[in-house]
Length: 420
Image (cartoon, rainbow, N blue to C red; front, side, top):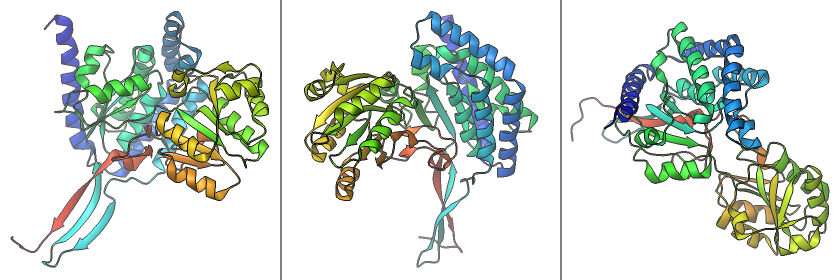
């Protein structure tokens, strides 16, 4: 092993050990102390705005020099408003119920044994993510509120921002009398270190990737630690033949353009062949600066539509681009979505309750909308407070991952001397 490899392994080993030791402590701390820690972090962020922005500027300058896209730079960028939003979210989190210790079920057996299932922390949570420094604060906060320790591994593009934020978090935890080692940042952003993190079974209880489909696939394919898949969003809006014109256009434009760089933005629009306003919808998207790709029917119906390739249907553009396909029925829309979607968020716009029900039951996704934008798939919008990501798998958690998703369960059994 080279000196560099030794240094990489040492960082993981040292910080992993500290996180595991901290998890044993924070798992038993009262809600009141956890809330005080979150309030301290909130104030710490506001006190250190200039230092955080200086660090973020260094990342943005490096990102521009490296040719990062506008959407990635938007995800990377911090400003006064975004830091204030992070600080406010921490305060909002203190108002939410602490799931740890919640009794989910109680029962008694004929032999007199009394059993109860309660929520408990997961332990040490690993988060690997790209570009977005706000994830650093959100992930740490959610893990702390649920009595977990967290090991954060961001991307090289945000290393200065993440380091500044974690410094604030750890200093704030120390000032609140909370174990600061509950939050660890892996500063080595090499692929080799990431690969070692994937296999830290002796430390991590779960690994959660947030970022591109490529990142998530890499983690799922290579990790030996249990993984919760999140994030990739090839989301669709399907416009049924009975859809009201203005509603359909409004929802489609909002789902695509309100913030195109996020995972709940619409990437594809499917339109029933009998809906008569396809050209107007495409024109409305183009008016907002959206590059529209389309199948042969869409190309014939509107000007300026680029011919979609087979690759387009599976792409997550994360930009002002969309692909439009004309379909013959709700069944065809469902089949297309289930073939190309990422099980994130899908929407139907229709005046028909039977068609809406058919779509909502038939589409395989964590969130399925009727007459609403996909942009609502979010922990805050669902009333969960901050979220760790959108789980697109079916086991343990699905959809926006709020506080309960960061807990497991334990069965407590009380007897009076019973033996088998």
